[in-house]
Image (cartoon, rainbow, N blue to C red; front, side, top):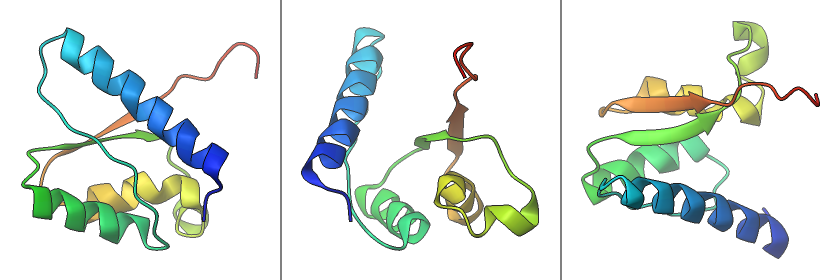
Length: 97
């Protein structure tokens, strides 16, 4: 499970995203949860809360053999399981990489 610093980093990310959405007049809510079955928990929470859509950051999609073993590919598992639309936001690689 994440340590306190990692939890705070995740809260900071969603707070920044929420402020950007609110500035644009978009009504949204967000949260950070911990679990070993991320996709299942996210889909369950979205259904429980009556969400219209799930928006997640995602790494670029990997080959099938590799992606099922990588935590960074969890957003794609959410996309496959969810009954609501899922929007995956893939950050472009930086010039510093």
